[in-house]
Image (cartoon, rainbow, N blue to C red):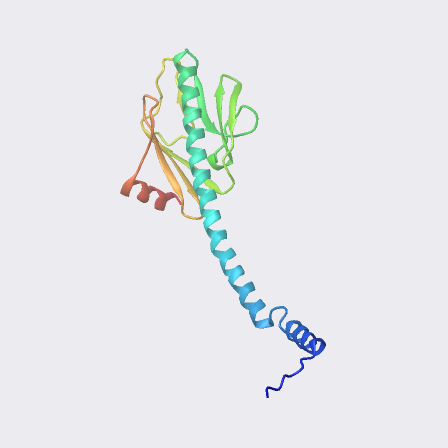
Length: 183
């Protein structure tokens, strides 16, 4: 004869509930491990984001330099004398290209360009003046010169401006040498 055991349904349900209650949540060790991994990921992504931001600022500044030179070239070819120089007070020129730069025609400021705070901008040309003059006959008074821009993360760029208003990028060892020299 087979003996059947009676199972108390209430006691079984109570045991299952107790087991579930004791298994809820995370341990302190698990929480600390997750927080550590999140902090580590945030640290690495922050550096990457800062690097991308500086690279984009370098690209933007290069575009603004092209825009300024194109406008100066157009005005010079129309017979106006235009000066590209660091931003100063009023229609005057300053000394630091990193504070921004401006185009001046006569006594009037045509356009002012901002330089992102994360970047430093330098001009190196011959003769060693802090202004570039586009004469009313369509030529520059200077020979070739270079704009060098640097970011704190090491991103940077070099563009050369030649006597016939062509602005082009410098690459390779020459770019590396100039960035090391100025930055």
